[in-house]
Image (tube, rainbow, N blue to C red; front, side, top):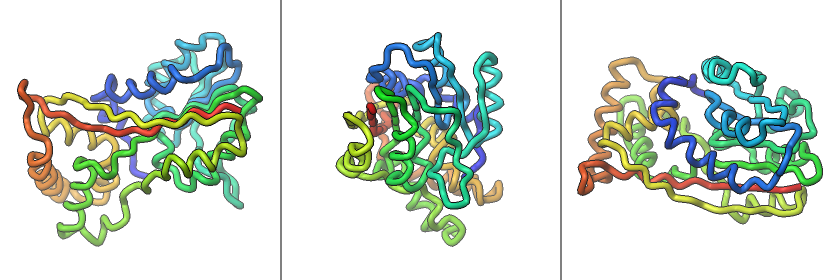
Length: 261
């Protein structure tokens, strides 16, 4: 995993937090006692959970020290712990906390974690009866913003180093339903495509530098990063024209899953 930069990520905090609000709005749990924010990042989603459920014991989990530091500064009264939220393996190591839980919330985190066919049932099995697993994941690998990353990576002198760095694609809606339904009483799955008005193509670059571009940029030196970003921004211009007000629209599809035990 690349090293996360909380400051870069939070440049678009409002836009990144909006899907978390939309996910939380579909969580039908009245008074959960035990809540975990998986892949809590800098605490923006955790703040929503503490506001919605002030009587709950809320814990945030992340594997990034930089993100956890930012989260602790933001919410000093919440417990944040370092942990791997991936699927358990024969060697162990996966964080499974102090369950069972009434709500497991994972906003824009599990897309970085492999083996969802194993992971999601493991998480569902950590729920109390009536508990909810709520997941939101970007589903944007086919968007120009991400397809052009692959194009620039494959065409440059860095091609060998950047081969295979992209995150894995998500499963289909049907696959996620079939994976979860044996472990829960109901599964609600939907897609939302957000259309974010941004100032210009440079703002798109700044957005993805905090997430999708990170695996591509981390192996490069400073001069290579500059060249990569220049080539990438030039290609973006073709696909993100200025609208009537001079802004560009970044289409951002996201997949939502709410599973209740």
